[in-house]
Image (cartoon, rainbow over all chains, first blue to last red; front, side, top):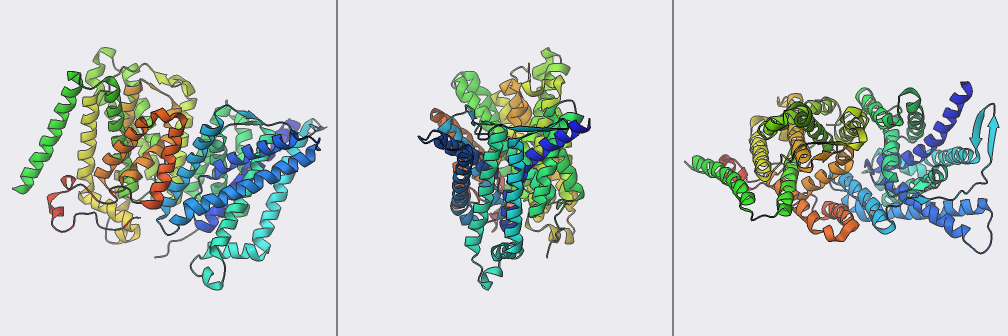
Amino acid sequence: MLALSIQYLLNALQLGSVYALIALGYTMVYGILTLINFAHGDIFMVGSYLALWGALFLLGSQVKLPLALVFIGALLFSMTLTALLGVLIERLAYRPLRQAPRVSAVITALGVGLFLENFTLATIGPQPQHVPPLTPGYSFTFLGVTCSDVQLLIIVLSLMLMVLLDWLVGYTMTGMALRAISYNRTIVPLMGVPVNRMISLTFAIGSAIAGAGGLLYGLAYPVLDPYMGVRIGWWAFIAAVVGGIGNIRGAMLGGYILGAVEIFTPVFLPASTYRDFVAFSLLLILLIFRPTGLLGRPTFERV
Amino acid sequence: MLRRRSQLLAWGGCLGLLVLAWILPASGLLNPYVQQVLMYVGINIILTLSLNLVNGYMGEFSVGHAGFMAIGAYIASILTVAVCPRFWGPWLFPFVLIGGGLGAALAGLVVAFPSFRTRGDYLAIVTLAFNMIVKSLLENIELIGGPRGYLGMARLTNVPWVVFWVLITLIALRNFVYSNAGRGVLAIREDELAANLIGVNTRRLKIYAFLISAFFAGIAGGLYAHLLQFINPRSFSILKSTDMLVMVYLGGIGSLAGSILGATIFTVLLELLRPLGVWRWVVGPLMLVLLMIFQPTGIMGLREAKILQPREEFGGVTRNPGTMP
């Protein structure tokens, strides 16, 4: 029984890591632009496709490359290109709307997300694509708990990325500029902070992390389809809201909570089909009692 | 005098449209495909009008309207299939639809109450969660088919009925928007706090707006179910809600004429683009993004067709006062 619980916990940690990585992108963009970037889940989807192509290209090369190198190559390929995609989307779709009513920007984000999904569907086709294994396939068994190398890789790499991001935002000059912009966007440019560059950087970092999440997700659940970003994206978005949107540590916490919800729902309820119901009910209840999330600070309206 | 003449004109026009909707399909001038598209246009007009009340006039941001539509569709379908005797179906159809609408309106309260405390993005998330919860619940109730969907409805929706409900929706919303309560709803859009301070009962008005909006979305759901004769939870996903948003913002927020225009253009355009295959689903979102960048208020953008305005509005002010939310 204990072993089984720990096993579930491990699975929850694995899934939660991916949710946390994607939730970070939502929360960073919201923190700096107060925009819900509904296209973010689809950036994650594009990221996992890019990782797949990168990996296939490297695996197909003449020289037999070691798996670790293929993995790192695919990771960098996916992260770089998704970062570019994120910056491009911001530049083309969101920047012209920066002075417009906020609702316009949110609708644009929804539109961009749908565009990415349907464009992928139209160009690649609806058939699912399979990700080749990029790890040797070891697994460790300890006291009845099995941990595969993929699980370990996902948990450790996600944690590393999160610590890196937390350090970047909390302890560097760049991070200070980011936090300053999210605090007040009118005054900060007067202090010499390049607002546009910082916003682009936010999109680049958020999307790159989603790209890494795409690769890791593809390793654990090796079937990709153009609409995979919708469900994962919504779940990550709930994670960001549960943790307190705009709060980076909140997004991480929320990611792990949502991972636990998904893994433990079938344990307590008859079918796994209830997981959406549980997750969104949790969100609704939380929003009623604590509208700014677990770690978010309460806001007030200035008149 | 003028008032009575314009009223006469409006009612006469409605009656004429109804008669036309009755005669045209019966005369065989319209082939079934055109009739079908016409009915879709009508259903979409109802949906767009109802969403515009919340998003356009009240300035809230609901992204979960497909949830109300789903409730209306399922209740109406269950009523015709399992409750009403089949023979009476066509006669009881309007009551069945109203039943679906009332069910949806009741669900509207689920969103209306959180809207007292949360606004903007967070309310959008509440409506979104509502949409997802409804879809997830429908998928999990085996009695109504679960994820496989529900079927067995007779094809009760026809052109006259759709036109009838479009007119009902239009008249009801037109009269609501220009009533005292409607002015209050506009005040909420402009500044909720200020509206509260000058004595607008914002809570009650929010409940009214959500009830009315959800009711008509439910009616549209019922019509949709009896047109397709088959519904499943997936047809009421967030994608459907996004379609409605496109129609509202294409036509123009805070404009009834705009909603009619937006729904018509969007529906007909998607039909015309059918030869493009999958690429047609790329065009819609692209259109939405370009629209938001270059014409964020939509085609009508807070303006209103003169025929829909009360006569008092003609003198001087011909557009809704105020700015966008």
